[in-house]
Length: 332
Image (tube, rainbow, N blue to C red; front, side, top):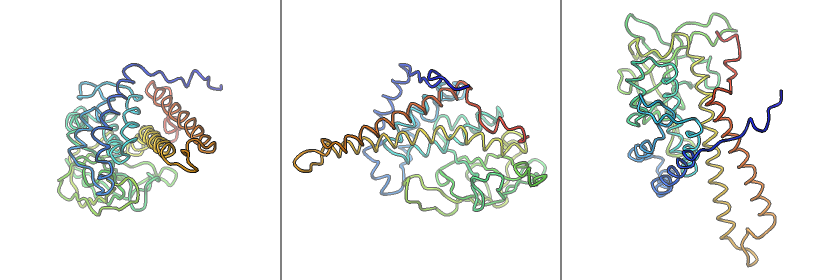
C-alpha cells in the first residue's frame, strides 16, 4: 500500500520551536565566535563541549531517572541540526558519543546505566564507539579483535582505527569476537560488546589520524593489549554484538542526517550572503536570474530534505519505522 502524504506530516510543537531557538541562540553566541579557531587548530576546547552538553544535547531523549529531559527523537534532530549549522565538528563529538549512550540505554543493565549512562547524559563523560578496524568497518562481521573469558573478567585484544572521539573519550564501547563463527553464512555470530574505561591497564590511545574535513573532531587508533574488564561490562548478552552494532547504526543515521541538513543550511545561508554582497556589472549577484534559480532550487531541496528527516525522526520515535535488521529472520 502506498503511503499517504499525511504519513509524512511533521508536527512541530511550541516546545520544538523553543528548543530550536534556544540551541540556535547558544550556537551563534558560544560556538560561532570560535568555529574558525576550532578548524585551524584542529581541536575543540573541552570547556565548550561541557557548555554544549549544558544546553541538553547529551540529555534530550533520555529518561529523567537517568538525568535526561525525556524529549523525543525529533527534538534531538533539531538540536543536532542547529549545532552542525555552526560547527560540524562540535556536532560530530555528540553524534559519536550517542553511539555509546544509545546502546547503553537500550541494552545496558541497571548497574551499567548507573555507572556509564548517567555521567554521559549529564555531559560529564564522552563516549567513543570502537568497532572499525584496519580490515573491517562497514563489514561489521569482519572484525578480528578478540575477547576471552577468564573467570570473573574478559580479556580483550585487538586494534581499532578511525575511532571518533578516541582521543577525548572516557568511555569506550568495544566490539570483539567472543566465539568463532559457526559457518561462513553465519559469520555475524559470535561478536559481543564491552564497556572499557580510559585508564584501564593495557588500553592505549594510539596514533592521531589526520583527515581533511571535520577538523576538531579527528579520529584515532585504539590499542587493546590484554585489556581486562569485569564480566559486568558485557553489554547485552554474549553474542549480541552484531545486532547491537547494526541497530545502533540505524539510530545513528538519523543523527548523521540531521548533521547533513544543518551543514546544508549553513552552505545555503553563506551562498545567499555572498550573492547579496558580491557585485558584478554594478549590481548584486542575487539580481541575476541564474543565481536566483539556484537559490530557489537549493531552498526547495533543502526544505524537502529537512521535512523528510523530520518525518523519519517522528515516525521512528513512534516505533513506526522498522529497521531491516529486525525484519530479517536469519540473524538469530
